[in-house]
Length: 252
Ligand SMILES: [Fe+2]
Image (spheres, rainbow, N blue to C red):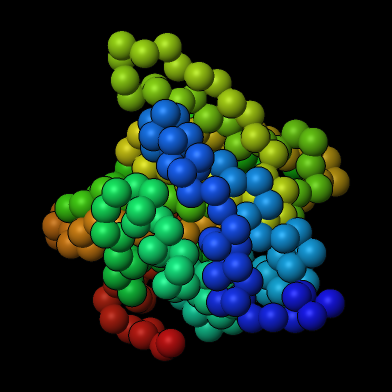
């Protein structure tokens, strides 16, 4: 019980220290900058500390629907900052970022404060919720890395489906279907992993944390506008995205 009540920072420090870094490093690079770490954080810790925060902000989630591509709910970084701050303890953990730096071979920085994806939550709560195949394309001047962590997985249908090596025409793609159980972590370079989430079944639920780091947080004005429009339609809604983009709700 002592371990369950320790801080997120301590739990993350312990989790990072327990990793077999050399093995993970090899896997990450052999899989074209893609890695799965089963139970990075203990399931019991995730269910005690993180899941209640994710459930508590469900009333703030923005439902979105793009016919033929995407249906689901999202809670932005801005809401996480205000109402679910334990997730930021993970996102901003220094030991975690040092681990990522070594893994990807680059110095990662946080996304700017006006990026609603920096540390956000994805909810699959209604039958058919899914997202079609896509890359997490970087609109930044540097590379973009996505880190997903499973929070709730009461589903047999809703899986993260990945096509490794899709961006390398000379290699045979490798197809993976993953269940992200509480505490499981997936790390990848957004421009390299072709991925989707398959539709949720009746009476099921899946919630995942997404975190984003970049190697250069600068973004041109045209790409920022495009990124904001995409986030408005596909994830968080216009009011959320453009209030912060225009500096109208800079609450911390
Ligand atoms: Fe994605």
